[in-house]
Structures are given as C-alpha cells and as structure tokens.
Length: 301
Length: 186
Figure (tube, rainbow over the protein chains, first blue to last red):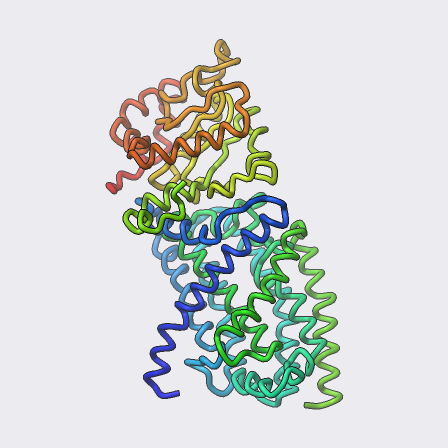
C-alpha cells in the first residue's frame, strides 16, 4: 500500500464502519421485534434517532472532562478500527499489531469512565464500576485466545495471520484453533454488551449507566462510539476465526452472520447479574481458551 | 405517516427527527402507568412509531405524566421537566392532571397541572385505552408539522408566572434550590 492509498483508507474506513454499524443497530432492533412478535421500527430508525440527537437545541454539559472523555472514547475506537484488517484494507497494520490492539481496546472504556465520572451521577459511577468488572471478566479468556493465536501462527501480526487463512476454508482459524474459537464466541456477547450481558447500561436498574447524563449531541456521539465498538469486536472475530475476506461484501456477510447469532441469543435471554456474568466469564470461556492454548503448545504451530 | 419520504426529510431533517423519534420518560405518578407496559411491549408495540421508553429525562424529549399529581411528585416533575433538552413535549395522561379527576377535593393533589408546567397535549379519560396514546402521538406529529407545540418556549417566556404558581404550592425554599432553566435561544 502506498502512502496516499493508506491516507484515503484512513478517512474512508471509519465511514464504512459507521454505515455498517448503523445498519446493524437498526437490524438488531427489527430482529428483536420480530422475535417478540412485534412489528418493530423501520430499519433506518437509528438514522432518525441520530438526526434528532444531533439537531437538538440544547446540549447540557457537565464540565470539560465530560466533553473530553467522550472525545477520547470516540478517538480510541477510531484508532482501534484502523488497526483491524477489513477485507484487505489495512491502513495502519504492521508487525505486532495484535499487541497494539490489546492496549488500544482499553482506551474507549477509559474515556467513557472519565466522562461518566465527571457527570457526578451515582448511576454513572455504578455503571462504570460494572463496566470495568466486566472487562476484568472477559479480558482473561480474550488474552488466552490471543495468546493461542500468536503461539499457533508464530507471529504477532494480525495481518499475516489473516493472510495465512486465505488458502482454503480449512485453513480458517475456526478449524485450526477450534477451542479458542468456541471461547471467543462465548465471550462475544460480553464484549459487545448485548442482552444477557447488558449489565453496564441496564436501563431498568441503573438508568442506562454511564450514559445517564448524556443528552443531545453527547448521546449521539456515545451511540456512534458504541456502534464502532460493535464493528471492531465482530471484525476481530471474523479476522481471527473466519478467515477474513477478499472483498467487502463477503466480509460484511460474515460479520452479519456472527452478529445475528448474538442478537438472536440476546432476544430471548434476560439479563445476568454482575457476579453471575463474572462467574460465567471465568468458567466456560476461560476453560475452553486455556485448554485451547495448552493444546496448541503441545501440538505446536 | 410520511416517515419514508426522503424529499421531505432532507428539506427539514430536524423536524423529521423530532417527529419520528419521540423518546419518552413515563412519570409513574399514579394508576395511569398501568397502561404503559402494554403500549411498549408486544401487544401494541409503540416502537413501530419510533416511541421508545428512555431511562432518564436527559435522553428523552416526550414527557408523559400518567395519573394524579400530588404536591410531592410535582417537585420531581418540575425537576425532570427542566432536565430534558429542548425541544421537549409534555403530555398529560388521564383526567387527573387535567382537573384533579377523582381527587378533585383532595388536600394533597394539584388540580390543574398546566398552571405549573406548560402541557402540550391532554389525553382525557379514566383510564384512557392504550390506543389513546397512539392517537396522541399522531396528533403530536401533526402539531409538530404545524409548529403548534411550543410548550418549552412558553415556559421560558412566562417563567415568572410558572415560578409564582410553583412557589405558592411548594414554598420558596424549593424554588430557590432549583437552578434556572437554561435560557438557550434555538
């Protein structure tokens, strides 16, 4: 990739990600409605919501950290996005980007924590404490999964791992590292924060958690950040275990499949408590991830 | 419903957004809240109109006051209303907020809510059916189209009148303790 093409993709990739994630948000509302035998909102309802939020007259701020935290969170998501290869588009990929990714994925929760802390609402602090506890829960299996990936391929570059899967369907990570793939699939709803694990922003318990004081443009930016996070996690799963894709269409279809599994599970399950979620994260996904790692170490890459 | 009319949406995106994305705070003051769960769940499904319950007043722009308003809840209603971002619409549900209804002679309820807050629409009845909420929503759309819902502007313009009435019921200490509503001009 020449420098100019890289710069063009740095601008274009977030826009593509935003469009796809807005489509996903609309689709999830419609699918959940159909599962519950409702008619549901139109597919473009998130667009209406975002237009409304951006055009609201008054936007109440709670100080500079409140504004900056949200921008840090958004920037963190945007930078993380550029490190993930999406269907051959990889503007910032280089050697060791899997390690960079692990660190970058923590920026946006920290930004949200800053912003929510500055709002001074007890519900926001409760939500943040739940968010960090949940992160503690899923980081353990996630790190084990990534360690297995790195051991098996002998590289810390996500890009070369994706390129190594492009030969045939059986060179996908799903078949090379089945136990790790299961572990990652099990923690996927936790990382996405969808229904059985939407503990952080539980509207009925803690009044939507970190977003409790957000309104107008702030809420719009927060939901865009949430959408980008959705895109990042699903794209990471597709890159690691479903072999990436040669073009955007295939990549989108694979993402859609993974997302629909999560939404359909979320449509029928009630919410867990935080201790149940932590127990879940440290039990089955960790077990699968650990045995996957040990298997890889015994068999070798 | 002209929700899918792209030309109209591009002409005035603000109005399009306001009309079809009414996020509601339901204020559970009384028995009226019983009619809300069927409205937002599978039976009547308010989400197909873009009406969605939100957790806090900061995020919502439709304020539904369901039931009688006692003097204690009036405080919470005023604080919640002033926390909502503009433009906001307040709708009173049931006959109690209109004139006291069943509790007209009670010492403890506020009989005419529109003396304390600007109400944009009323749903009369005891109880109104869930369908009445949808009729109210479609009527609200028409009023937004015609530019007839300006409760939040009226509140800002006549803040002295409303504060005077609030002070008579709630006392001076309460009025002094709440900050003035943001005087942002659209």
